[in-house]
Image (cartoon, rainbow, N blue to C red; front, top):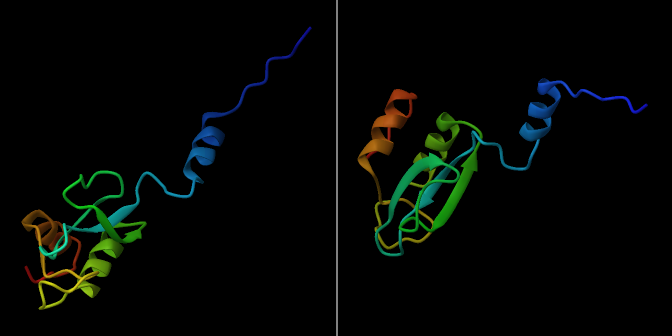
Length: 101
C-alpha cells in the first residue's frame, strides 16, 4: 500500500519565497525617453508607459532610496529621474525618504 506524504504548508511557502524575484520586490521605473518621470511600484505592475527598470529592491524604503539616487535636474538625461509621480513622492515620504518632485 502506498503511503501518502504530506508536505507542510510552511515548506511550500518557503519554496515559493526563494525564487529569484520575490512577490514583495519593488522597482524604480522610468517613463518613456524624454519624460524623465519615475515611479516606485511593486516589481510587476508599472505598466507599458514605464518601460525601463532602473533598480529593483526588496523593500519600498530601499526602492525609494534608489529612486532618490537617480534624481537629476536634466529632463533629457537617460537612466535618471527628472521628476516623480505624486503618489510615489507621498509613499516614499511615509517611508522616510523625501523625493523632490
